[in-house]
View 1 (tube, rainbow, N blue to C red):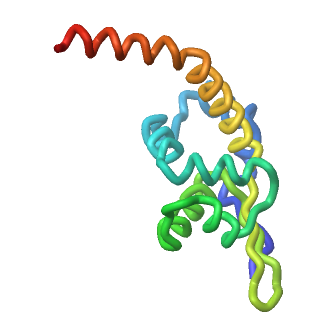
View 2 (view 1 turned 90 degrees about the horizontal axis):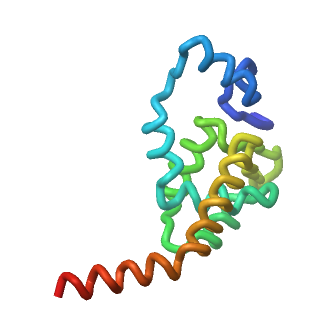
Length: 138
C-alpha cells in the first residue's frame, strides 16, 4: 500500500516554483478550472476540515452533512490530484486512511478566512442594500 501520494510533481512543491513557471509564460491549468474545483460545495468543507490536521474518511463523512460516500470519495481524489490534500494509508486491518491539507491548501484556507471576515464585516451593508433594492422593485 502507498504511504502517501500528493500527485504533485516534485518541481512544483513551492509557490516560488509555480511563480517561476508563470514568469516563463506557462500556465498549464487555466485559473477558471482551478476556481471551479475549489469553489465546489464539498471541496471548501473538506479543505476547512483538513486544515486543522490529519482527518480520517469516516470523520469527514460524519462532519460534512449531506455528502454521499461516492461524492466524498470523488472530491477527495480530485483535491489530492490537484495537490490540495495528501493521502496517507496505514497498513492495518482494516486500512486506516488519513487526509491532510497541503501547504497550498492551507494558503487557500487563509484566503477563505479573509473572504469570510470580509463578508461578516459587510453583512449589514448587504442586508440594507437588499432592502433598498427590494423596496424600489415593488
